[in-house]
Image 1 (cartoon, helix red, strand yellow):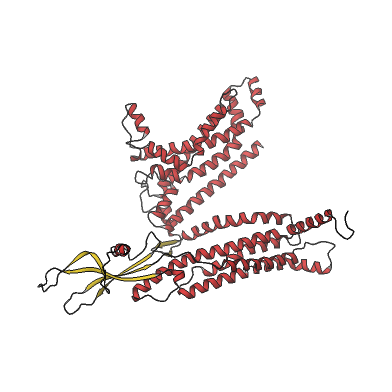
Image 2 (image 1 turned 120 degrees about the vertical axis):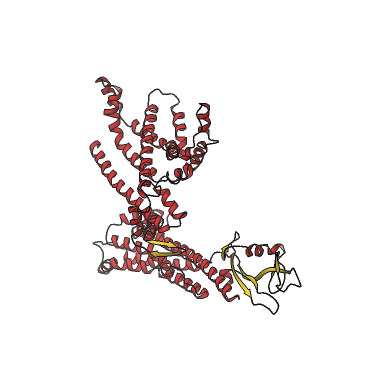
Length: 576
């Protein structure tokens, strides 16, 4: 029996349900997601920035040590342990009576000051460092080495002695962040944002009193302001950490203010969403709450790199420095004045190869996929499921594995294709020795990879066509070709056209096949635009030029997408 003063279980459930409803309607879920994203952005962004700063500070410490020839005071926990040694050849007098004091260098080395030989196992790294051509490098263990050649002044009867000042900075752990303080600042941010959402998040209602209506009136500007300001503890903590590192090393943290303000981004987005929904229905607020992680991920993984690429296309990179060059990269690429039209490095030659590559593959993919789908859609075909599974295998295997297999098959000496030609009495073909041979190898490989997709799409569309249409055409005396032309093909078009468009975009940027099968042979003639951009970046070290190349590719595909979008809309209007 329920006690008189104790609320019933149903009443308790009703209170919990009302609380959860209010929790959702006032955007509390959005606050949770925004605070989590703010903490992650602030912490991970600061950690990545400090990693770059740590690497720069280690290099600066090596240079300072080699210049001053003495180890300065520094933060060993942040930068590692530094050792300094003066190393020279072990001299040996070959002719004591000679006035020229000729010396011969032995294979062993010694420390200039102590005279100890470097012949112990622990000295091997120092011995190897002596013969390095570089003046600064990282070894496999993460140690940073620096080297500077110096000369001792001549003694009374001796010749000047050259020695090398070797500095070794031990490997160090990534920068440690005050994660506990990040958690505490995140809780403070959460409480401020929750209070703002609770106090100003009420929607307009006719039953509200004057105080509640006044709150709702000011919520339009108070919510965005307070939710954005709520991230200030995280921003202050990041600023203090950056200032501490800069003070210890004397080196500025790259983009320090920008990194410190990363926490404001999700809170600003939350504030703007609150601004749009203040005083209105909260149905969209819940949707935006669930979409926020995806929107942030897309913004970070897509739009940020794209923006950096756009900015890089207007810069020239040389020895770690970027110089503004404006539109010169685009002018050089589109004018193609450096190379003749038939040269593989000419933009228009590569564009023609890319268009030929794309068109050939799309035609083969569509025709083979359509033919196999028609065969598999025939009534009475036995083992239909096994055939489908076998034909999808090329699509299921990772394309880089397939590319390497086909590359081996086209090998001139050991390839399976030339072995088969030898059985037919045909001499082996150097597939990569000519443009057409290399393109045949590339197209064959990509056709093997691409036809299953078209087959699956076409087969699904064929099975959706009503059989009554074919029966009516048969009664009317139409042949199979007439039925295919008048019924099958028109009804396949709405499904096949988007697949062809998608396949064209995929093939246009199919990097793996070109790079792994032909490698651009002969002489870069079989390269397409995307592989050419890769070579400009990572083989020629012209990152700005490669970024401009990539941006031109983007605009080509954007124009193609706009054109095909109109074609798709026209097809939908006709067959809807």
